Structures are given as C-alpha cells and as structure tokens.
Image 1 (cartoon, rainbow, N blue to C red):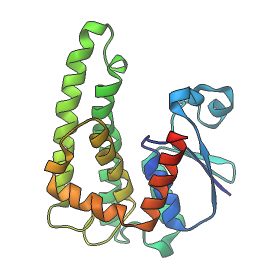
Image 2: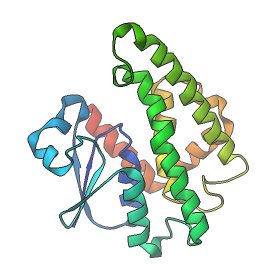
Image 3: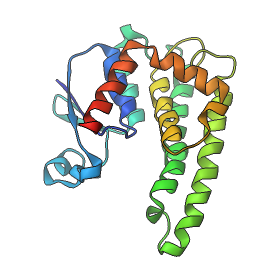
Length: 209
C-alpha cells in the first residue's frame, strides 16, 4: 500500500502528481503546514524532520521528492516515467537534485528569511538575495526548455512535475513568469495533462476548504 503525506501548495505537489502518473492506488494524507501539523507527534513518527513529502511503501518511509520520484519511475517501468538510458536517467536525477538543493532554497529565502539569518535587520537582504536567485533559477529552467516539449526533451518524465512547483511559486510570489516564454508554454502543456490538472485542483480544493 502506498500512502503519500503532502501539503497543498508545497513542493510535495511533485510527488503527488508522480503518484497519479503511475495509475497505482494510493492514499493521500494532507499535512497542513500552515496549521503546524508537520510538528505533531503523530507526523514526527512518519518523518522526524517534519517535512513533506513522505511516502509510506508498505510501512517503509521514503522522503524527498528526488528519491520518491525516482522510486516511482523504477517501480512502474511500464509507465516510462524516466529515461531508460542510464546516463539520461542520471541527468534527470541530477536536475531534480538541483531543484531540491538550489532552486527550492532560493524561494525559501524570500518567505522564510529567519531560517537563513538571525536578527530582523538581516531579513530584507536575505529576501532580496532570494528573489534575485530564484528569478535567475527560473530563467535557467526556461532556457532548459527552449526548443523542447518537456524538461528532458521530447518525452514527459517525472522531472516535469517537480519543475511545475516552481512555476506556481513564482506566480504566487508575483514574479513575471509570463516573461519566460518557454517555461510558460510548457506550463500550459502541463496543465492540459489530466493527471496534472486533477492533482492541482484536488490540492487547491483542500487549501481553500
């Protein structure tokens, strides 16, 4: 049995879409970060780091989008959710590692400056640095998609749902995302995928209910 712990609007959207892409039955359990549910004793038993996503695979817990998405692609090879060529698969995993280690933290600096610097006087500088870094990262993603249909090339992979997270965050943060023509055209293609549309709408319904 697969059970996904996620929070609407968080980076866990990537793994949520990934599960939908597999077509496998799973249970989705919202952990509302805004309400501090990640700090409850119950969830700390699932992921002591208090973060989402977490995926329970018959009781064994996997964390981090890169690991979860790679696992899903390998468990369901018939879905062809990652490149079959080892070098191309490694390139896709490397891209997801970049999303996790560089792109995600750059946006966090905008909204959670206290995690990066002590003292309120330092926070405006952290936020400004975050905005510049996040925008530069979005521009790099845009350049990665130039002349391609999907992040990795002509085939859709589970790298794509991870990139969707940052486009949504960019819009939420009032970045001029429409100026990124390739990224925006890709976003429009993503939202036409039934699995993507279904998952995004399901999370929006939770966040607004």
